[in-house]
Image (cartoon, rainbow, N blue to C red):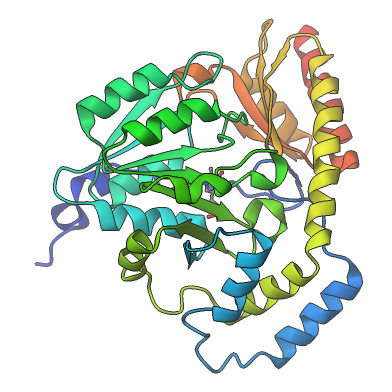
Length: 363
Ligand SMILES: *Cc1c(COP(=O)(O)O)cnc(C)c1O
């Protein structure tokens, strides 16, 4: 008799629930931090031609040399720093965890933070240590330093700006953490396009700092491209775990083409930042809502006065608007929801549906 899955699969995997992506067909999709804008038609024509001519019968360049050179330039990677590409930055998180997963090694992050940090710690058999943020979602530096002394983490992940809270942590606090860490600190700048701060220029200063970026949030989520920058001594080791051909030829060609028109994504990010300010203000003007400051392309808010996040989420969904309900995911996120900044028209639809969901409550 063959064994059942529960006799062979690791118990911590059996205990996981899979990362849930809700169906969104026909919905106003404001749940996943995507850029709502498409590329200009002439650029799409150029991409169509590139795709038509791409030798998809051949394996792609395993080193993506041409794309890497373009990224070095576009992202201002400091001289002397190496870069590694991933199938999204999710894959890079996994490569890092695989490399550092010595028996008993710990992966640390703050909470609430990006859920994949914890999930990937589990995938790779690392001990996970999460340090709660302050109730205003600022970094509790003393608590992190105490947890570092206790757990001696091999890797610490810090998202800057943080997801799902949207704020930038205090940079001096992060520097103290990097100085105190016995292992590497990965600063995850997934939302860099919408923030005016980065650790990129300090990369060479710290022997244990790695910096991660992705093109997903700034407009190329469907292509799956993430990047890690850091000192060659770390990157040479991590490269050994990168599966050959992890970045496909269409991703290589199209990303490089879009980077040649770098102003397009910059202009879209600028439009999203303007809309973010408008939306934050309109949200804050609604009764019974607490809006948190954001440096990302999404807004975290809390409902109160008799509304529950679950009800608001369901009522929006019934009106064809999909956002993210965070209630229940962490005690600090009680009655919190997260909405991605969409087009002006999508944002207005969201705000009207939100207001209507409150009126509904009063009847
Ligand atoms: C979205 C996100 C990622 C993952 O992005 P990819 O699409 O896998 O590149 C990584 N970190 C944070 C903080 C994110 O919010």
